[in-house]
Length: 64
Image 1: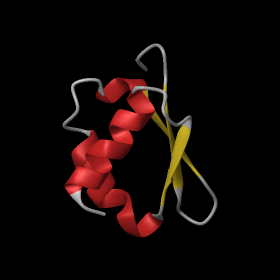
Image 2: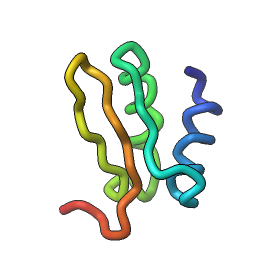
Image 3: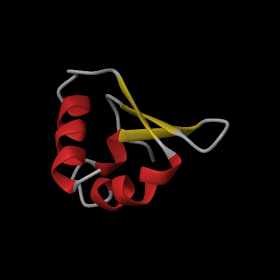
């Protein structure tokens, strides 16, 4: 995944265009590097799945 693709996915999650997005184990580090630079980073929630994939959602309230 490229940085532009990741930014587009994060925008879709943020704007409720999609409810969730699955990131594969192989794309995780690239995805995370872009995610942690976002101002609203704490609103994103990643839930690990069996096999190493992560499902990201955007929450109404930031995590603590």
